[in-house]
Amino acid sequence: MATPLRMHGAQAGIIEPAMVRIPEGWFGMGCASGRDDEKPVHRVWVDAFELGAYQVTNEQYGCFVAATNSGPPPNCNDPNFNDPKMPVTAVPWHEAAAYCDWLSAATNKRYRLPSEAEWERAARGGTEGLLYPWGNAGPEAVPDYEKRWKLGPEPVGLYAPNAYGLYNLGDNVHEWCADWYDAGYYGHAPERNPRGPAGGIRRASRGGSWRHHVKVTRTAARSSIPPELQYADYGFRIAQSLGKLVVPVEDAGSS
Image (cartoon, rainbow, N blue to C red):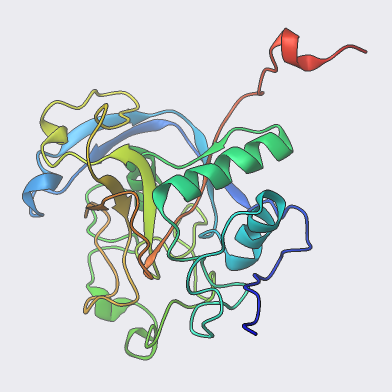
């Protein structure tokens, strides 16, 4: 008889991710020397929000699986992927969004996936025009680059964060964003809080990948896949809208 699929954290109830406040402000989104879908560089305003300090881990996601009776990711029994502190991987976009909805309902907060603009704003760490979260030096500048990511992702937070206190931005796994992907979106995107096109066939993602030949990515680099796919180098981190969540009167119950 096959061993039942289990995930670390299944008995823990809820493990809220550590969040970091990203200040509001303008920044230059895109890269003039990058791919066509990163152009033109354009000024974007992003309201203040919070972003997970780490990619969502197996331990955290396991609480969602247990609470909702959702199916676990296909690689949850693979030792190259199932360490409790590794980022959860092979989660399709709609399951990442469902995790945010579940956590929001359980905590009375407003968790969600970040927009592309929010992700890039956070990855830049308050700087302008740099190629990577750490500066302009290439991947060889990443500590222990040649020793890392041989068979899968690594546990989150092993190395120093960026200037905002965010770990693994640009490496480890691709991270789902809320937006639909449009290669030409930058040519007509709104200046304030862009959220991507109204529809599409691929969802946007950001960040690097343990299984790519070049395992870290530039801050402005964009990627995308159809939302139903479950790739072993795709995970996510969550965002939170600031401000108190207002419960409608009809749902608040009586005292």
